[in-house]
Length: 273
Image (cartoon, rainbow, N blue to C red; front, side, top):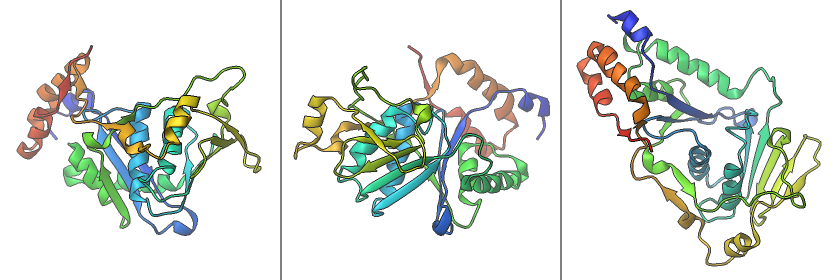
């Protein structure tokens, strides 16, 4: 690409990929890569919650799901996600009876997803002219990285928030520190947060719901799907970052092939509050 310096010193748009890769006896199963960019949505707790909901709904006929996760308190460990998982497993949206989260010890050296990510990197290097120029290009790299790869595009309508929130912990009813949690279990029929601080088999429970919330969610008329509110539009790139987008349009886009330019010219923006 001509104008190498202009491209090298221009900030980029963030593209996110959450991978669900099989391990153990399921190693030949599909590898799912959930993809979106920061013009579509961000990485807040409700955004993270959204791709878990979509994944588990795709696997809704499995009765028991075990996920080994990176031990990241800000990503795979947050109370919004845990509360929603309790509600999801107890809902009609899935047929799953048990979902388990098992967190790797800090400092682990390898995950099943790492091999897939390496394949994605190789596919990116082998892309046309060695360039990945749009989110669609990255989607194609993920989708063709391996024979069992399945790229899943997260559109605005796939992101949601739940109107129910965790109750605040108290001295009498504390919650565990997230960095001490190593194991979490969500069981159909239980509205407790079930967790362990090691893998010895010892578990503890705490309650994330208020009494009024428990009364509501245990009612026969309660419908979890009605408590999820989905986006109708992309979040857009914040106007405070307009200089970033403007720099890309001025320096990078003129160097792109004609068929790639429209993606950048039509990126949604939003006005900051």
